[in-house]
Length: 114
Length: 113
Image (cartoon, rainbow over all chains, first blue to last red; front, side):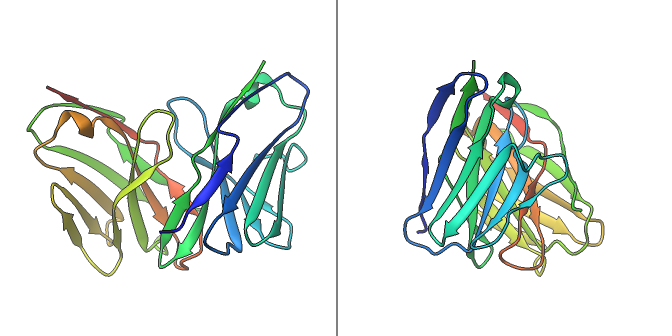
């Protein structure tokens, strides 16, 4: 089946620094990637839709200048959390549609900002 | 946009009993309804899904029903086992097969041995 590799799995960073999260589709060319954020004991909330070769589409309330998304190729999408603050600490996960209504999820990134 | 509600938020059942989780969605254009099981710190795992052209689907101990008119869908787990304990999310997706998935708030299921 389709596989997406997400790195890093865990990251701790200092407040004010930036963190890049990568999602790479290993056996599928993904024109679209979705980025979700999940706070403890909450649901997965869609942050943005990443489209290869074009600007990402952000959900209402998500700061596009803070969460930079780049989808420069059909196999790689990145999410950069800029000037991270403790309230950005969360579980970030990518997913892409594999066709026929299926979705493949990355393994997630646990971000802790101290 | 689409909004998915889910009840109950927590559910405890005795091992061997059945568990039912109910969801509603708001956008009548949605036509794909997956259910995911998520263990702590891990990615969601698809356990069953249903498309709008069917009303019921079953896979061993798990079944899903869909009422498109009422915009309701439900997950039924029979003969529950301790390993069924996890958080379950219902979700809805729009017509195209490359569209975003909107998740419900989740149900924390505990199966008591």
